[in-house]
Image (cartoon, rainbow, N blue to C red; front, side, top):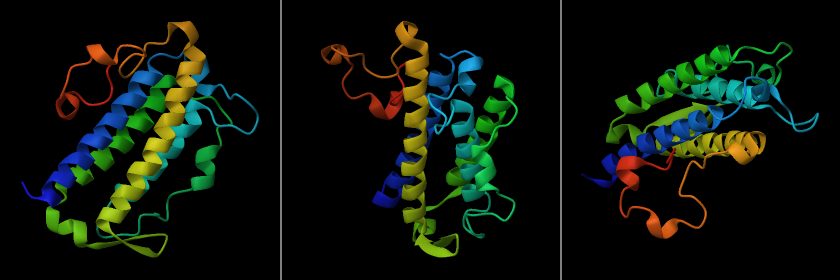
Length: 182
């Protein structure tokens, strides 16, 4: 396997890991806590999911052929939730957006990594756009995990190797098991 093929395999694994982390975190909070904001200027888990979903759908729908900021996306609206939606709606947004992203990434070839894509009219080689998206997604999944851990309190089940138990962790299983250990 050459480096470009290995990179694509790793990108896909990374996205799947962050999807799994977000899902495992959200399972540990109540329906009400999906909408809880820690202060008036913060975002709830539901709002973060709405934003991540909007971003993934926009970036990965026709990834190689259209601008990553689609005309039907309303980014500002992603940060508004005047009516609390159900857990089912939040998870549907999550699943549909990840489905678009993962399906798009699965179709990429190593040659596609050198193609030019656009985000808000700015040119990126595809590998730059993928890296940009991974870091953006990881940032927001980290927020989801942090909030979920805060809301779950003492009932939180760690999603990675538990504190103080590194020596017990299996060696060399990251590529097959991933980061989410729940």
